[in-house]
Figure 1 (tube, rainbow, N blue to C red):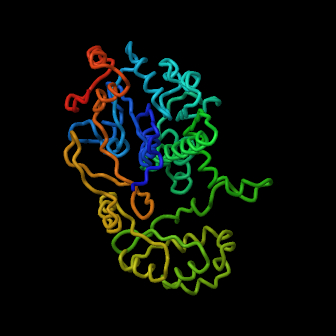
Figure 2 (cartoon, rainbow, N blue to C red; figure 1 turned 90 degrees about the vertical axis):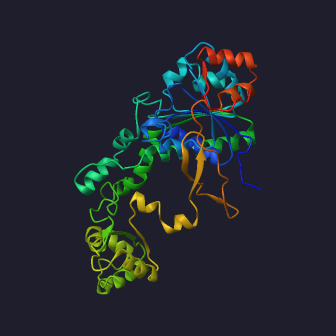
Figure 3 (cartoon, one colour; figure 1 turned 45 degrees about the vertical axis):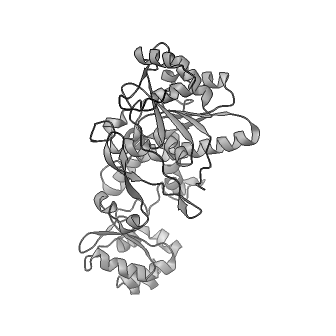
Length: 406
């Protein structure tokens, strides 16, 4: 029997780009039924995320919107509000990442929705908390990265600021929002009560940065400077080998002794500056210069054998291309292939989570825009003539190749 703890849970997805779709994608991984409402112009990520055969399913969109049914609506058109009222009534959970003022104009803001449906769980993902001076400001992942100091950390370590080349804020905040929704579902099961959740990107990511880098400033009086000095060391980076780079981390005293012995520097194990965790914390700059020194006398594979014999944490530094060919990922079948309704053969990422020794069950492909419009209208109680009228007036849009299930 497949593991679907959210089987029967209905999620109305009013999100676009990455942070919101990442949250609802996670709920779909657990078996939730998701209806994604998309504008006639389409989710920006369909094209912004890169090239695709039709220009409508960029890789990121393809992966983040698996398992979601798609209804295409012009929310500003007369008649759309009636469809949305039925969708809201259908849903257990509403997830939105539109700006609050836009939601209010459409009557889809949390206050309006929950006034009519107090038992609903409404999760609003925002750039900045609505109760602060930045509330309502537009934002994107890179802007949040800058605001919470990630480029500033790179500046301090490397001498130049830089973004993490991954939409890290979107992914992290999306996952945290999914966790908040799961807790709300549990609470509703226990108490019968709905809730309005707000998950702001800025405060959420600022908390994560400060958990690491408030560091010695966490005390009154401060015990030292801001910043985890290990993470800010310019030597805290992959080490060059004869033919590439390797990532190695050693933390405990036995690991340090094993690392020094493996790299031919066993005599340093008795150096009082490096003999204990506490001593290395005091002499962090000198220690990281030693542990980050190049290892160019052997290849990456040779060093991996040495470090694994010593039971040390070490892995090659992959490129994206080599990561996709990693033997472990190949063995566990993280990536497979399937046919998409409009994009042909596509690469699929299975869930990384296992339940009772099996991966979570696969979800269907990301739907083309308007693929499920006719079927959803039928399920919402519209007659064939009523659905046809919505389509004729442009209130709803159906994909031309979608099966007609009405």
